[in-house]
Image (cartoon, rainbow, N blue to C red):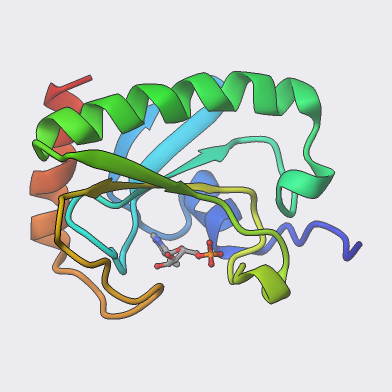
Amino acid sequence: MTAYDRDNIFAKILAGTIPSVKLYEDEDTLAFMDVMPQAPGHLLVIPKAGSRNLLDADPAVLAKLLPVVQKLANAAKEAFEADGVYIAQFNEPAAGQTVFHLHFHVIPRHDGLPLKPHAGGMADVELLKAQAEKIRAAL
Ligand code: AMP
């Protein structure tokens, strides 16, 4: 497998060298809004430890990450009064991965509302900040 690239865009978000709309942080984990949301409330959860994706991640890192995914999935579902939550995670380009730092997508879903395309249009940052605030309030 290709080695982890320390200059990937999520590593830069972790380092604070590029901006993001953050909504949760602990010692091991960061969550922020996806800039190209497939539905309102689309967020990403990443470990602070570097791995390219799930395939090369330390199981101890995964064990800490999944409870945060669950917490944020429940908060996003409540905040957006969603009917369900779609969790997605891609490994390698063949599977649709475009950013090579492990991340879980958390996407609130409503009955009958189709998802927008993956990595489609950029969202307004002020809107993302308001959505992050709504999710934080439900945590
Ligand atoms: P994938 O690697 O296919 O799971 O997708 C990476 C996701 O990261 C896409 O949904 C992008 O919209 C999102 N993304 C890319 N750059 C940024 C960024 N700077 N801040 C937040 N989300 C991003």
